[in-house]
Length: 192
Image (tube, rainbow, N blue to C red):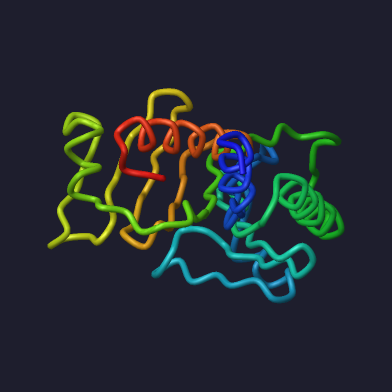
């Protein structure tokens, strides 16, 4: 297998675990009233300042705040987060709450998991990548935290070879970060 094919296989092992996006309906809400009218809503202001509304298909949760801001979390793709927000807006609209026709939706964070396909020597990686961009304290957390500049994401590497890429705004950010990781670790002879 060529080096290019190997990189593509490792990138192909990436799987989106969570997409977080935000939007707003541009008006204040009476969350107590919304919670009473919105079937299945969880609202406990002593525990959390927002109302939690779960969408079943696609699976996601909308955190609705008094300010009208909505954070959608738990979706497994960018199209799913858009669909979940659309459902939340339709549901709120059905309750008589005015909702913009096409609200701005901003992806805040995409969390992806992957597998580099072999065990990793995290001590050697911490030294090789340079301590200024790496946090590795195995007594505190079993993974190595590596902050990349391009793309602007954080990669968690585990001794098992598993990775978690967080902070991306597009699915391609995790692919680009995995490419950077593979390239740097290969150059350091820390990845076959």
